[in-house]
Length: 556
Image (cartoon, rainbow, N blue to C red):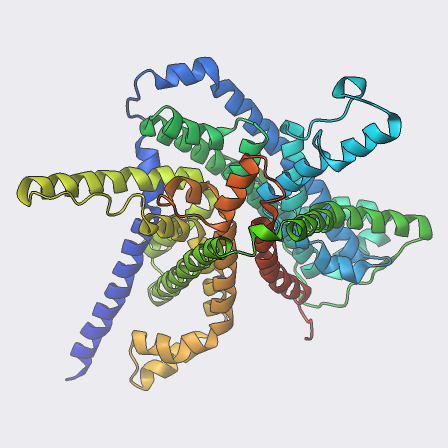
């Protein structure tokens, strides 16, 4: 006679978790829905003005930037991944992790360092003028770093690790059997890579390229500093320069649709092709023994990305920081660092808590709607920070105006800004943007916990909440820690959303770096930039260790 009430209680609990998951997913996805809802709203003559003046430049620069960065990251990332995975040459073991180091450097930081190095007043051109006796820029030609090609190069140097780490993981997981068969059929090592290894790793390579392209479209600091007009800078100028939030939202919607179309196009191009191997027998990958000339070429090919993407920028930043100690040996700088730390900590904590609850809710009741809701909530990482800022500020501003009007009419007081222009809005933007980062890590951790443990906990009388607290949380502590670190570092580096949504007189390290660099105080910006880079090294070490152990049969 106790079975029926127990069944009702179980059903009620499951529905509660499902409802929480769906409501959380709806709230997280709401900024994207707000942006998309503005597509067909009237915006006056703003679009006609944009079309006559800058819209074509936004489209052209964005497309050229994507093509250049896509090609550059594909060549550098995939090529280096193949070399360190399949070839034996001096320094290979160091390059396995060193090639990930540029991931710690935000694109806008490396842009500032190379501008200070290669600009007309920089040490490179000064040395050239001194050596050759040139007196002005009319006496010689030097490539302009603040240009479209310069921005493309900067993005390629810091974003190729996305392609490198995913393609290397894919190469490590491939069976040696298919590679050996291709060699017995007369394929050279390069042909085996082109015809066998590369096609098998295509989904991973495409995923890495997509991440690099999304980061390119999200960037604001680099393109703004280099005076390259893209959709991101266009959204900022349309909103704050023209005072047209609706038109800014429509620009954001165009950018969002373009990103989704890119992802859908790549998946459609695969068709029904399968990218997996059928063997479960793994042996250690045998490294190709290269001759001396090819060893040198391989070493240089792997060393240049590390040199240009991390060693040189980090060295420049360190030199500038030591020469401008008065800019960071003061309480103001540490106040900026404290602001960055608090925002990153709170956002990481909320993102991990939400990810745990949503992932567990999906585990309890993996219905179509919960999976759809989780997918909708995870799209935030594909959305540039400037677009999210538009999608958050519009409803927040409407809510603030509504509450203020009601308070004025019935209470005779003004409430002012409650949501928009506050820390609440900034943290919400971070959680929306980086929830997918924490969710993927948490979901992977929960996936390793067998369902038998859930059943055992239930037979001992534990409900879902108690099972989560006593069984799952202790088992996924490592995944939770990894997720929190990744979100923490991403928030430290985030610039567009922070720039648009931060409260007045509230500055973070990323914003401080941008402000000083915009005023051409590149050396003074080095201390804040270097702090961001140092923090960014932490996940690089974690990712490197994970990739190294990703091959089946690996023993720690």
